Image (cartoon, rainbow, N blue to C red; front, side, top):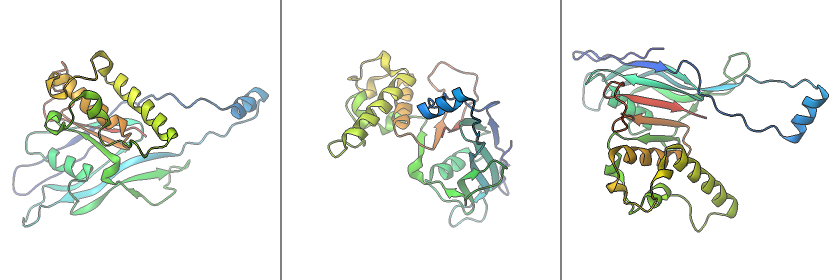
Amino acid sequence: MRATSAAAPAPKLGLRLMPSPQPLRLLPPPLNRGVHEKCRKGTALRVSSEHSRFEVRRVSFRPPGTEHNLLNEVTFSLPERSFGLIFGRSGSGKTTLLQLLSGFSKPTSGSISIQRYGNDGEPIQPPEMLSSKRVGIVFQFPERYFLADTVLEEITFGLPRQKADIALREELAIRLQMAINSVGLNRISLEEDPHALSGGFKRRLALAIQLVQTPDLLLLDEPLAGLGMIWFSKSTYILLFPF
């Protein structure tokens, strides 16, 4: 899959989207008792191949008051439960594209949406525009945006508190625990000062903050910086479309 962009007169822009070889493997929800009973009796079950895709269609961007596009008709799509990598040289338009995908800026033309497809591969409903509230982003220097005094307060900052009912509180507690465990923050004290963490743990914390929110699209700006992994080129963005 490729996404190309160009700006006249200079420099020539180039972006490449590299999807994962296979969609991320997620455990399916447990079968309920009724489904188990049908399976035991040999009743045929209908398997649906409906799916969603995150789609960027012919997106161009021209800053107000200028004559040249920074991005020109960028097009790519990303299947649900998968990830892609965008990389390119300095000045190739990566940051501009990131701002458009996150909702910080609006495209001059084109669309950014989630499209639902049926079993026959055809759209089954109009494309749904992606709100910025449904997008999570982890910046290259996340510590610049930390506000709380402890790791736990930072992760839970902005979550419903007194007004949340019991069911919501239980759901938030589960999401919180999963986020902490999945990024490895269970190895440190949640009472630590976020600004005192190492660079790698600051990025883990920033990622946990977004995972708690369960975004439809997750954008990572140079996600491996400070994590001991050097085989990705600099200035990379990873897009995750998990749901």
